[in-house]
Length: 377
Image (cartoon, rainbow, N blue to C red; front, side, top):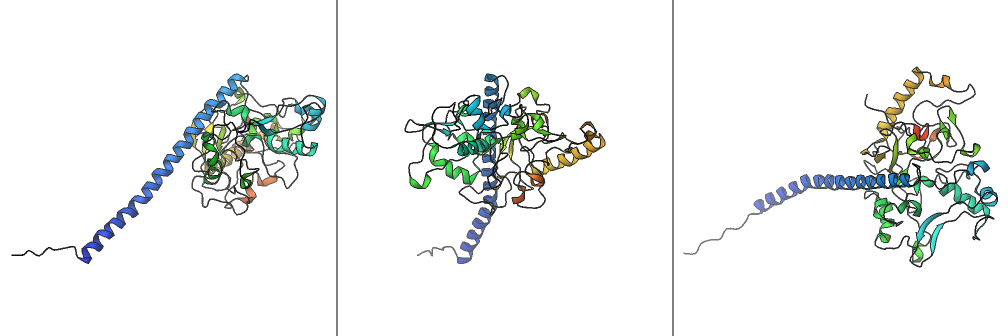
């Protein structure tokens, strides 16, 4: 007697497919969160390694932080042309030797330097955009840049892996810059010059940046009013780590772009290959952050803004402005609003939302002696 072999009915197949679809819908967000957490963990690891590099650098340089400026350039009002023509040739900011054996760098020349191509205007602009911690006294249409964005330069990357394009300088969630830098990761040279026409002139800046306020003399961002660094001799001398009064509350390095909780990859106000949002352009931004005591945590805009509000109230109650000269423009709170950037601070005019009101890390009041967050209430 033949037995009839029974197969699956259409209804049964649909039920199974529905269950599989439901499981996928449940698991995909969990997988995405796990991947996101892994990338944050990797970024934290990068910053911990950079903390060791920073401390090693300080150990070799009398407890000092990295700087691209001569300590005494304030004697000539921070003018690189005058310095290189009258005092001496400043150390050059180098990226490293490329695959052709040529030394690649941003040159700042003058009469006392070896012969270099270019003109004084170009050298001056190079200084403002790359050598000094943060750009001041540059043409109004120039981008806000500075040495705080170049931790992968040759003078510092020797404390890591001696390569400009070392993966440690890029956060895995920094998608736009990672895509640009990734083609150079596999090469062993200190610096890689692009070999195809589409990439000529491209330099990809690190995902991590120092606190430029902490790289200037603390009096630049004084609570008694912001002082242009080109107006006093000691302005460009990088402070020692020992000057940090609140190492567990002063940021040292962080992710320059808005990577956690961002609403989109790119800022429509920015052009070019890297059009990322800045870390302080979204209220929910939480960059992975290295503090001066060496700990790393996700510390964001909301926390910094809350700390600033609390600090302003405390400063008013303690009459902090009463300790300043009558003619000064006293700075309440944790970051300097009275600077060459005006009330907008660091790129805030291009923020995602109107809730953002902070330039912590960048314009910290009192610089290395100040704070970017406060202890728990």
